[in-house]
Length: 194
Image (cartoon, rainbow, N blue to C red; front, side, top):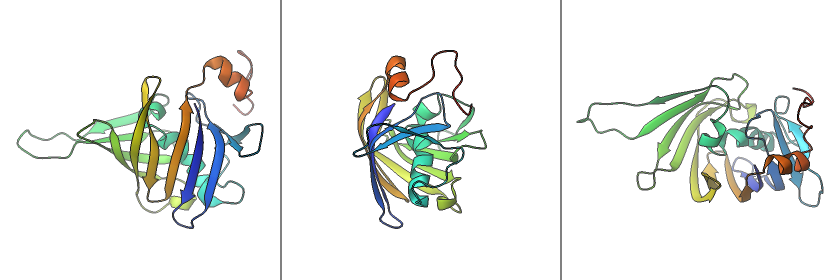
């Protein structure tokens, strides 16, 4: 998965534009970033990183990006628990769904998902962050401007209680392109730090 990513912290108005951000769909530990003017992607180890270039806000944005990018994409790997609120037919309820990564090292805790009844797409997510920048209370993020990428629908605009974010040029990388762009080891070799 590869895209450009702009993010603004609503807490301190800090802004960063990443010319490219990439991650593997089946691996949560690493994220690759490239700033404007740089040629190569830099691999970040999210298991050790709490800030980025001295910024706690940008560290939090990068740390949660993989999980909040697209819940169906994020939950396709790893252990997750899913729950749906059920009520008798005569009781009016909102259509709520809960998803929670069971890995204690994940960037987010339980997530409450709300769908847009007109489109069936995710419109809002309330979650418990596990990053020090955002600890202490539930946070929310809304999703807008969906596009179809491969067989997934991805929201290009996200606004949250912490950040204003925009994704551009979202694309899935095939295994050959991912190995080349992310400088992944050949089949059978071990990824450093695994």
